[in-house]
Length: 584
Image (cartoon, rainbow, N blue to C red):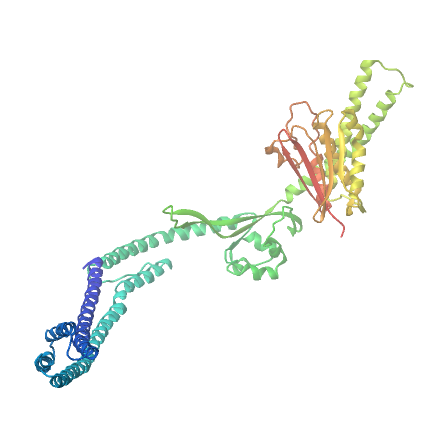
């Protein structure tokens, strides 16, 4: 029998029980109503007739007037038609006979008075009969009501027991198989593919159980067929990780170590067989290097570790492990998302590259230092050539000397920038921190480029209030950064334009900014502006620098615990910022 049919029969049975109880209740309520009507109608009407007749007799003297006779006859006729009690008919006949004596024109007044007393006696008798009838019928009605109430309560009890039994047992017909299905599915989620269901019958649950058993059989076959392949792939991956020259550590979402190759064990002096499966948060408390690796914030700077009997440099990389996660969605049938399953930490040995980089930096520093002296000598010689006391040059010679002087100045600036860069990269940058007024730094930088600005008729505007909080910085290095901003702004600004220098207090920092109103920088170049040797492509109208000024500026500001950035839009100009913490 199908589930739908069983549900229909069950609810049909409930409907029949409700109809039965309703019919019984209606029947006995109708009985009570009928008996109540008998009491209220027949006997009450009789009492009403007798009361009216008595009132007529009381209100009129003998002999009765025609009007009184007409009213009495009317009430008497109604009473004759409403005889309901035993003995009431005889009393009504006696009443009529006595009444005839009252209205007999031949009777004397005394005889009429005697007949009137008989009339009153018979009216009293009729009242007595009906009052007794009311009492008797009321008692019978009460008995009938109690009996009906007993039957209704009995029927209600039977219906309650039936419905209670139905409520207790019928939901189990659906809930019990569903609970078994739920438990079986939970076992499947635990990869127990040997789970089976056994439902007797031919309903949908039995059919679903057969399909479920078929599915578990197929899953069991699939599990057995793929287990060996999965184990082989696992061993292969572990072998690849083990043979890699980089230190690799894998941690799952529970912060347990998944894999730990040989190189990582050698660096941290840990046995890889003993740490796999151990909680990384507990293990990091006993190992400083592991604690540095597992820190939340990963620094881009190389880590210096003693390895291979020397100080070596390693670059830490962290990658999140994501696995496919399929979730139900009301709009789409299935949605694939990524679920975090842990992290992988890789320590790449960059010692050789670090050594090469240091060699490059030392070479650049040496070459720059060696070039600086002859370039300065050439610049001095050009200055002497430009003196008329040495000799007078023609116009072409003066132009050549001027070009050579400009090239020497450019070479001298490049060598100075290379020396500064070498100091930063080798860690030999010396900073002389002094508490100073930030507005004075801005004024110093503006004065340094004022001559260049006047040559292009560019207005330099300073926006700053007095009594700004002081900053602890290297005045020369900070001013150098601001001068570099201003030089770039002058280079890309049109003649007779304006450059705005602003120094303001922003939270707990002093913010310096230089804004020009040139053509601006394309968004694709903004992220690379502070990279070494990067230069924004130009159309040839502006002479480009070495690509080191902004990179050195970034190193100077970050060395002073500051922050540097840029905002620019095509057609609106550029605005370069850096902020430095105030002195508390």
